[in-house]
Image 1 (cartoon, rainbow, N blue to C red):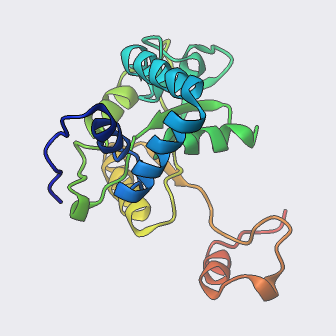
Image 2: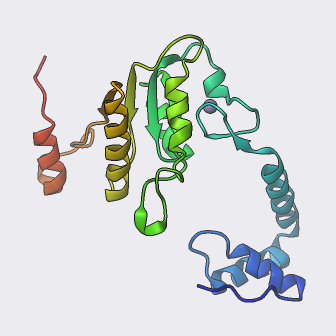
Length: 207
Ligand SMILES: [Zn+2]
């Protein structure tokens, strides 16, 4: 979809700029601009300042590729974590979710996307070369012994996991995939058939 020419007036440029946000069309952008100028000029100034600062200072961690203000992020700098375990997620938000489980103490690699040929997203766009470098260069002398694929269970997430898994397995690296199944507290009667089918396929011995 072709963007209109940059408007001449400041209000027009603000409305056009707000349209970079996902899901924001011309009407919503106009509503946001009017709201900020009419009701919250301090908030608007703070937003402008924060955006400027973030764009200037936030880059990507050289190790795990997540957002970071330092060359190596806090998680990768934490020497209590196990660098032999590497969890691959699609986005920083997914990384936060895995962290909140308190059940993973390895390191991460954040793809910042997923393979999706229809959207022009291939191995280059998910920084696959950087992932391979990360795996092949031992951290503090410790090699990666297991890669946990924690991409989403969407068709793109599955394709991404499949692609990464195949390449890494061909290099002799142990690759695992997070399990699918019934949610904690879930009742079988209310679970969709696809989820129940996967749970049956991924069943394991009772220890
Ligand atoms: Zn990092």
